[in-house]
Amino acid sequence: MATALILCIGNDLVADDGAGKAVHACLEKITLPAGTRLVFLGLGGIDLLEEINGEDLLVVVDAVQLGAAAGTVHILDWQSIPVRQPRPVSGHGIGVREAIEVGRRLYPEKTPQRIFLVGIEGACFDQLGQAISEPVAAAIPVAVREILLLLR
Image (cartoon, rainbow, N blue to C red):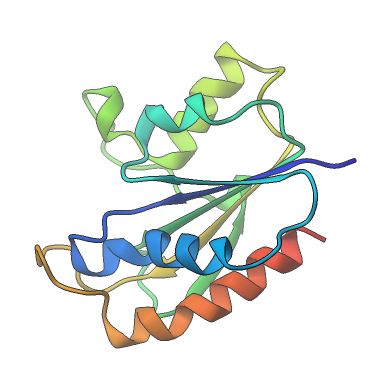
C-alpha cells in the first residue's frame, strides 16, 4: 500500500499565511486514502523533517508569493519548488526545498521520492490578527481538490 504525508504549514495569526491551516481544517473533515497521514505545522523550516518518515509521497501545503494573483493555486513538483534567496543564516529561516534537501542528504531512506508543493498565492503576509483574504479563502477548496488528485 502506498503511503503519503500531507504536511500543512502556516500561521493563521498572520492573514494569508493561514492558508495551510485552513486547508488542514478542510482535510480533517474528509476520509483520506488509507496510508495517508495529515499533519499541521505552524512553521516550516528544518522542523518539517521530524514529520517525514519514509512515505512514498509528500505533499506540502503552504501560502506562497510567486508573483501570481492572490488565490492562485500552484502545484509544483520537486524540481519546481523555489529555492529561497538569499541563503538564511539559521535552520529556522530555511524554505521547504532547502529543508527537504537537507533531509535527502541526512536521511535518504526517509525522504519520499515524490514531493509536491501545493502553494496558495497570498497577498497579505504582514497583518497580525487578520483573517485570510477572500481570494485565498476561495482557493482553499481548489487546493483540497488538487491534493486529493495527487493522492490517487
